[in-house]
Amino acid sequence: MDNNLDLKVAKTSRSAIDSLQNSKSEFQSVIQKMDTEITELSQEVRIQNGSATSSSINRINKLKLHRKRLGDMLAVMDQHGETAWEMLRPEAKQTFEEVLLARQ
Image: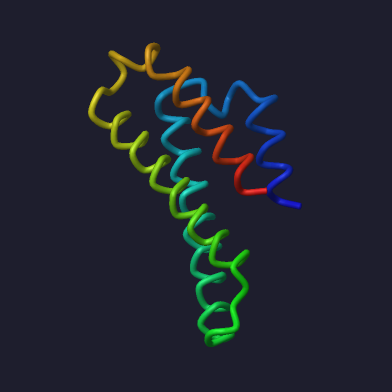
């Protein structure tokens, strides 16, 4: 499963969150995957027309919340740039791993 691979890479690969530029790329990639997943799940819910399960709706909401977290962290990275990267890296890494775990 793609999500398990994402999580494994995030935990074992220093390259995922080693530099500001790589981190931005990783965050953007996960955001794109989440956007796709949100779109697909939303279409399924619309097709079910009122008979959608609460688990599907909960999944969409969870993805949206975590997508916002990634977007907010990405904005912080853009604002602070390289100068504050060393201070931001632990929080960025934790956010990234939590989001990947939530996507499973």
